[in-house]
Length: 119
Length: 133
Image (cartoon, rainbow over all chains, first blue to last red; front, top):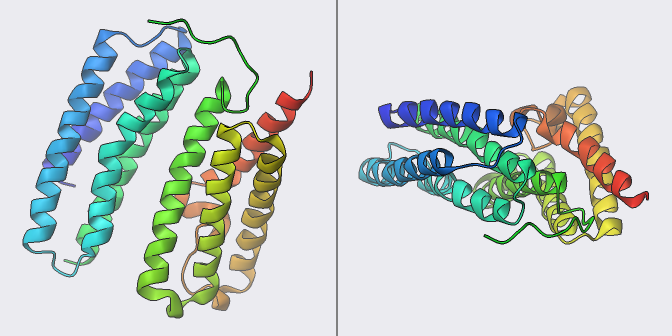
């Protein structure tokens, strides 16, 4: 994994703990949660830029379409989750965010796999 | 900030919100995978790749039906999904030569953390639970 993906995965793990605590205590996300989710999303934008420059520069036989699809997937899942959770201001809405935070590291692993199998 | 609407018992609200989101993620994943397989390498393994297309279609229908509270459609789609993941799961273990490449439901969806196996069970419970009372 790239350094950025590693840092973002750690951020996802922290986010995960935060969201689980909120769900268990039946509290709604506050400024800390939203702030850190925005931070995570900014990191994902950075990852898109880095990833695009990597794959477009020298894709070494990596399927560009697949790689870009995963990059874009990682970028959009959090906003989609936030939008979907918006109408459900209960712990269920928070759980939607939790699912997104769980999926993002999986997408990183897939990105890593796609990249490394062709090197 | 407006207050959350009163529980309308739609399959897409409450805990259903989470279920629909997971279905949506799988629908995206399966549709993306299926279109990639169709375009780039369908002839290599037609059976598993055709099953990937089928799986993708079922997830898309299930997501839409659950989100819009179409219980009957959702019930059919989710039941079909459970049958599919079990059938393809067993078939991929028994007739390995027909499945040289994995499909979404191969080995009971192991490639997706067994979510394809667990999700229809949760989905069925959710739809049927909501229909009572």
